[in-house]
Image 1 (cartoon, each protein chain N blue to C red):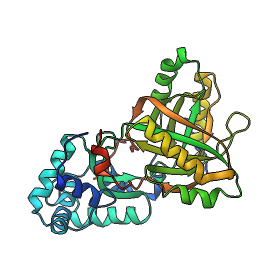
Image 2 (tube, rainbow over the protein chains, first blue to last red):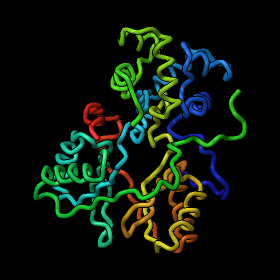
Image 3 (tube, chains in turn blue, green):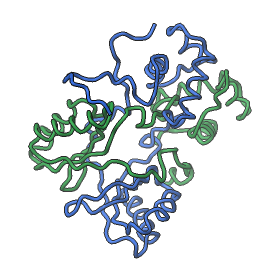
Length: 180
Length: 157
């Protein structure tokens, strides 16, 4: 890996193996597709591309994993999921793979990740995001989860969010010199 | 909860995991739902307007940002808002939540690569005067693909 000797921001261009056209498409679609019969064409025209190119490139970005999905993305809060708890679990490393996959299928779970411990202050290696209608429901989900994890789980915590201080979603920064 | 009729629910159920990547995606959706393309577009606009849908479009993976991780700091409650402001203006931060724990600020830091990520974290540690807990994802068992929405259950008070 080469390290830039320039202290200023290195171009965030090589991100995810995207070229300038991909980046222009990301910038044009990251806050949503235009809701018109031909959304690809509508994205393409200001970029001097064709709708078919935009559609094919977005499909390719999805296949390569840069785009997880192109979807109608619900706002869970507006659907009534007003309580969310980031639950963190100290799970025996010998069983975490199997248990992680099992836990991921429990209703109300939106994310389930393994992350490193930092002992002694942070013993938790499994992160499970739970969503419910109320704090009580999140607690019931967490209890079901604890039962599922059984003796492989030594300890856990539910960290409720008391305030959203910033939430922009993943965004590519605009750069000078957009592609023509 | 926002008032949603059956078509709204069918739209969300059928397409929260993905749209058909057709040349006319809303026409393809309409065909599956047995309604007109214009009706699908109108519903999506309304659902977006009322913020039931945050958008209709791509959800990007963190791979897009090159390097990223979940990070946390423990700061005294009295200093929390000031620390949050420092974190929010730090380059590459796209989420920041206050949580009820000793580690009371949780944020996602992104950068073009691992080297830049580490230098951003170190700069932030210096400015905040506390260590940053680094929690990169080691393995994803389930990554935000939406989950089935139990409509009936949501309606009970």
